[in-house]
Image (cartoon, rainbow, N blue to C red; front, side):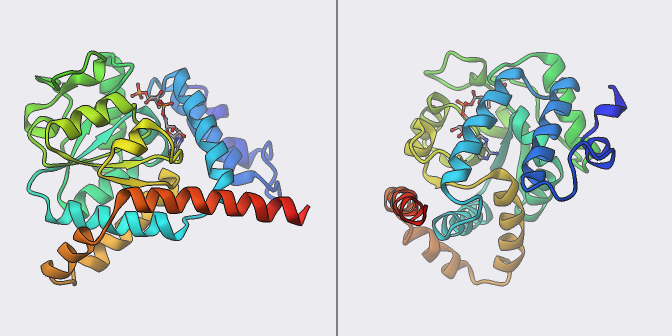
Length: 263
Ligand code: PTJ
């Protein structure tokens, strides 16, 4: 890789000035470009990120209360699961590799690479990136098949996603989320678009940026370990995903009205 293009180098060389109002966002873009050059991300992942950025604007680029609640419920579900799995695609590996490994450790989850644009080279590059960030084991086999699904995402690991009871995924396509739900799994989806098919079909939808959602979930997992099992279960039982999604849409619409009045 051309070192002069690394995200650190870009900010250090002053190409993204320290006082640039969108500095953080521009550095994230550089990370994605770097991941593209390293064979982790596909070009389509850049388009997906752009859509995410737009929705992030609408929620104020902050973890709002509906997202925080969903993140707590998601952690509760992962902690009570028998075989939880974190499904990793190119965008996740580019943005939060260290956090994926850390969360997996906190909730005792397996980590599995699952790609829409699957190639053995990409699977290997992503598994290596996760290992570089501390993962001891990364499932990559694709030795089982999700029924009803025809994309490359149907290829899952028997030991991992195929037998999982809870799956955490992000920036996913709606078909696979629905197929996993149809298999009887609880699906936790991180997706900035509350209207995506993934958001609408998941068991728990976290309308937040993965960059904020993962660190929050790591913190909640540490805090929740002190909480009694019954309390954790209560949190899950009281959660209504449709209601929470509707809160996110109400938030966006009232925020837009407020912004239009402030102009
Ligand atoms: O790595 P692969 O081969 O598995 O391919 C992955 C992509 C992302 C290309 C593929 O899954 C895809 O095309 O995804 P979609 O259908 O564009 O969906 C991506 C969703 O993630 C959209 O609803 C975006 O709003 C959302 N999104 C984008 N960036 C973020 C995000 N959600 C949370 N955090 C983000 N940073």
